[in-house]
Image 1 (tube, helix red, strand yellow):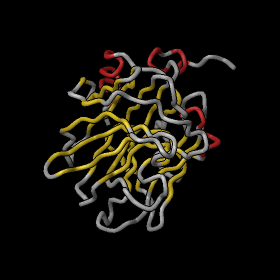
Image 2 (cartoon, one colour):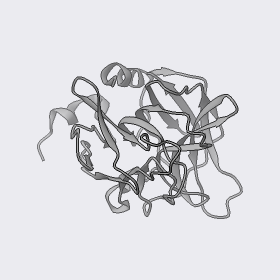
Image 3 (spheres, helix red, strand yellow):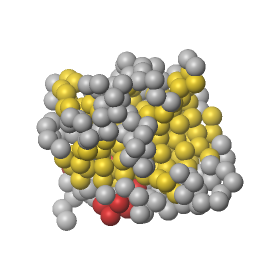
Image 4 (spheres, one colour):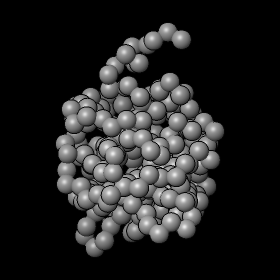
Length: 240
């Protein structure tokens, strides 16, 4: 296969998912990485809404028309098409632009490929009082005595943010709008293999709760830790 300009960019080395959202309409989101997986929008009520956020840039809104109602809108990639996201012992990085609203929900799931107390990883928003958390958590085989993760604070409602993170060995690091922020990390335990799990954006693994309520743009994942400069570059290149 010929090497493309996309592949030649240093930032795209070891990229495993890049839903660039260039479609701007319809129910399919195509992965620009060499894995070429396809995500499909899902909904029980209505349809996820495409919205132009700036010239040439589009995002998808989930559960935004009636945020108090469980419209059950999310994005899904079947397990067989996203085995490349089975991060276990390796370092990895995640990134996504998002704009979310106060729905009264305790948790709002963003990117995930996991089963609670079983396997995999998830990134989700939560609130305790006036504190707004973003957490990346590793899940472990059933019967494990602990789950480990890393989190940061200050993810305010009603504004666009670039969230990115890197897992490096036993420690996790968060970035907001390209800059490193204070991150509380457990001593991370490797997640168990999630090869049999779908990748989902916007809901709990069981597809029945923890709905994301807002807009998002360009979820990405790498099977390596991005450098500090690469996290900063993500922000400079991708503002929605």
